[in-house]
Image (cartoon, rainbow, N blue to C red; front, top):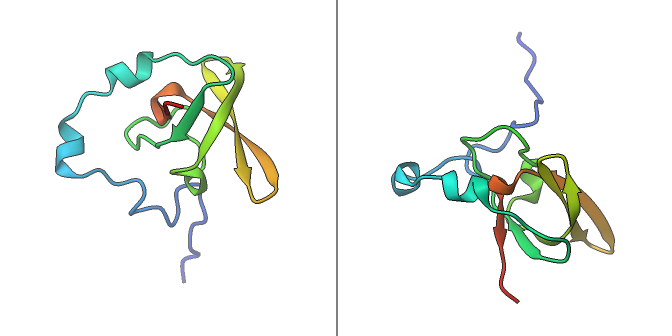
Length: 98
């Protein structure tokens, strides 16, 4: 018997699959966006870009940008009473107004 893989993308088929309409859209604008500390962002994973991809558990979470770390951003996300920090590339983040 072959052992089942428990890699970082296991169990994420629904979360990391694009629809036909999403496959046609260009992501260059999302790659070029910049954030400043204090901005509110939503984590929206872009499955076609593997660099700077956060763990799929954080798909859909919102948080506050704490600062830049290399080409990525450090985002503080509230999970229960804890604040967890996710390091994500700008292509995996969407700005939230407010």
